[in-house]
Amino acid sequence: MAADPRFFPCAGPQTLASIATVAGGQYQGDAERRFTGVASLQAATPDEVSFIDHRRHLPGLKQSQAGAVVLPAELAAEVPEGCIAIVVASAYLGFARVARLFHPVPALEPGVHPTAVVAPDAEVGPGCEIGPYAVIGAGAILGAGCAIGAHVVVGPGVELGAGCRLHPHSCISHAVAGAGVVLHPGARVGQEGFGLLVGPDGRFETVPQLGKVVLGDGVEVGANSCIDRGSQSDTIIGPGSRIDNLAQIGHNVQTGKGCVIVALAGISGSAVLGDYVTVAAQAGIAGHLKVGRKARIGAQAGVMNDVPEGIDVVGSPAWPVRETFRAFSALRKLAQPPGSKKAGEKT
Image (cartoon, rainbow, N blue to C red; front, side, top):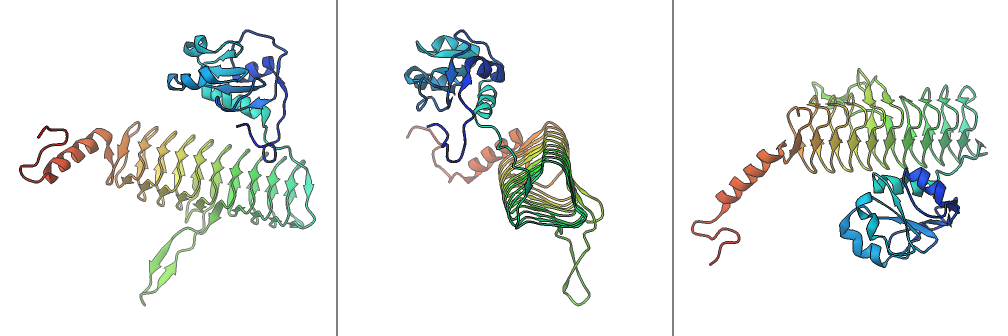
């Protein structure tokens, strides 16, 4: 079904020409024909745009009532009569851009809500929106066009670049953020890292965490994820990196640009990730390790050694994929009871 207008106001109708331009595609048809929105193949009406990116979805395309479909060139001939093919290099990317055309990021409503608390010496750039019960600490700096949601806390001295969006109940302290940074609801950035020692009396003593967090341009931090500030040096998240919900980034961690860290992953203190590293769900990386550029860490992997660049590792302890599968195969053979039949063997 189409997006619920209660939650996703629509900027339609849009012309076919505008849609194709945004998608980066070619088409044949009336450039001024108007469409009202986007929807799935199954739910789309003749006034809506859909997409298909794989042949396995062809049955849905044949039955679809969509007025236009974003799709790769090799599937264009499969479009049913009356439907316009918008041919693109990447169907999913093209459709995502069309969806954004119809459902843009909500416009700001500049101003400070009466219940918000803004320190007298805080610097709030032009066009910022500061929502109900938000707190902007002493000496904080907000770049132009920032959106600060309800109950957000921006700590003393924090700097936000232009166009940052901090969603409700997120907070940021001891941090410097670039332009276009997004914190989703409940995200925590800049809190004290997990640094402790055992004193002579056997009690834990907290090690002062004196670093900060540096978030590069375009970083997004998912709901209820945490990024600890550094202990002596800084925690650094490279430009364009995306952190999913419920992830934990320890103190002094450094990531390169364009890293992806998926839900429930944990990266221990002082680990270093190169550019474009992917850490899949529930994976863990031990402290002080180095993960090379474009390496990929599989789901639930336990990384206990450095990972060279471009390598895929899985398992716990994490090994390269082929080695892990060979080890699993050997272990399975060892686990077979004497005289038992192998899987698939006739009796």
